[in-house]
Amino acid sequence: MNKIYLDNNATTMVDPRVMEKMQPYFIEKYGNPNSLHGFGTETHPAMGEALNSLYVGINASDDSDIIVNSCGTESNNTVLKGIYFDLINNGTKNHIITSQIEHPAIRQTCEFLETLGVDVTYLPVNDDGIVTEEILKQHIRKDETALVSIMWANNETGLINPVKELAAMAHEHGALFHTDAVQAVGKVKVDVQETDVDFLTFSAHKFHGPKGVGGLYIKEGLNLTPLFHGGEQMGRKRAGTVNVAFMVGMGYALDLAVNALDFENKEVRRLRDKLEDAIVSINDTIIIGKRELRTPNTILVSFKGIEGEAFLWDLNWNGIAASTGSACSSEDLEADATFQAMNVDTDLSHTGVRFSLSRFTSESDIDKAIEVIKKTVERLRSISSTY
Image (cartoon, rainbow, N blue to C red; front, top):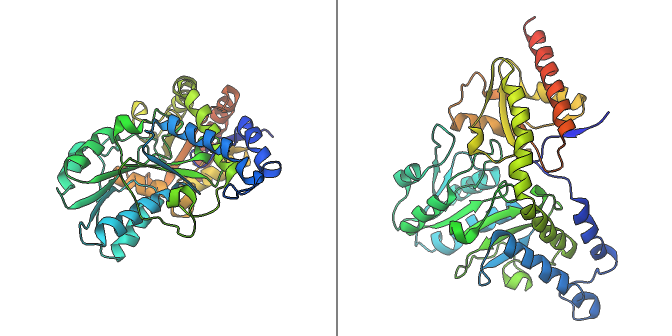
């Protein structure tokens, strides 16, 4: 049976070209880059090339910092806890703003900070599922809010927030602005100078790089108390031996992803829309979020009368991978929280299924998925009607 992977918001396959680029740094050029001998120093050119790719990929200025770390979760924790140590714990400010639709790496970290006395506001979204300037304006406190952290694109719906405008409003009120761009990088244009964000999170395995490596952009002139201490790596901003092979892979993966953005916006979007059109032709089915407001690869759908996990088991049995919610929090059915924030009909709230494509998704994949989805809906509804 041919397997079809439609869960690319959870993780992506490593591009074979990326794997080939990484290979020498496992066996041939394996030295610790902090060593003074040749085994260590021979890794430096590749690291410099990879770091340059990251700067170019998000248009970071030479005076800014990009900290290579383990993942998006680490980046998000670094920003939120760094703000706590640098601005809140010293009594300067005590207010953080985020949203109700954030990834657990943001939401649960904010909940932890609340146990330390931090005042956190969780913004609602509008009817389109977007955090707007107007919503932020109602809750931000001039010279009291330390940080606004709003994701660039939602991991469940693919809906894109107006981060440029939100960042400008945060700065107008004396607050710093962070965006979790894990689901945006590689799908839409991400330019940190154009949007003027202070901190930005990204993760290689969301754009066909390896798992276990990510990055944190820090705008020039800003510093954060490190999450890790114990070494001079990353300019003393993140201790720990650098994973050279994975850093090389992330840099090259971002190169390829940025060069493929036009393909993403046209061909991936076309296949996404083809799948979506077929899904909405099924009775009692709703798509969450207008397609023109979403990343080009993502669909969150609710099938009335069908329990989401049962639906996924049927898809999996037929060789198709999809998701009910964030893979980092699948047991919590993350899509439920998204539905609640968007005021989706509660009778449907447990049935959210996410399909997410990539540039490796083929026409035949979509044709087969459409066939299986229609048959699965028909079968499960016929079963439920007998009870």
